[in-house]
Length: 260
Image (cartoon, rainbow, N blue to C red):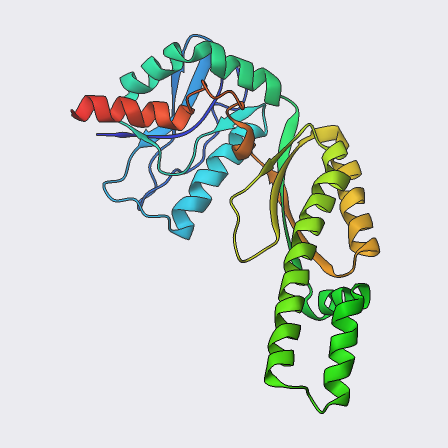
């Protein structure tokens, strides 16, 4: 049976004996694969695995439970290896890199921040800040709404101003919150928000991070900020080296070779 991998920690971690259910229905029992100084949290892999809320939460609970006793490198959801022996092989082959990441992330946690605009507030802001938009809007009002061409032009100007404001506010967030974190990772762009940023924060500095977030809310009320965390440091498992192969990809490559 294939092996589902949750995360990696030190073999000496005091929380490896934690009793917590894994993914699957019924839930699979979580066990430990040790290799040298490293240990992987694993279970049997369900035959069919979908990103359902139940299994996503189970994956998270395993990482949270182990993280309470020390640093853990989270492996992304649905990472599956052919068997426990392959997991041990990957731990051995990547031991130096994994131990370095454990040292780098020890005593740190991740907070994810998503930001979007309050539509009414940001619209008032861009109109107030742009003389050309304000003049055309007033001219259209006095003309009973303005011509079709003027309405289209005004709409295009407002859309461009809003887009520019999104970019400026995304930079503002990184500039103001970056100094409170050890590292910052930008998530993939989306139409749902203007910024999706993950911050690696020293556990003892979390209050400083939240104070900075609250100041941004007070000084920039057109921004709506949502913070999620503390989280296992998903966004910071692998360093930025272009030669560093992701750990989850290493398990996948081992699985592909096993099935070849």
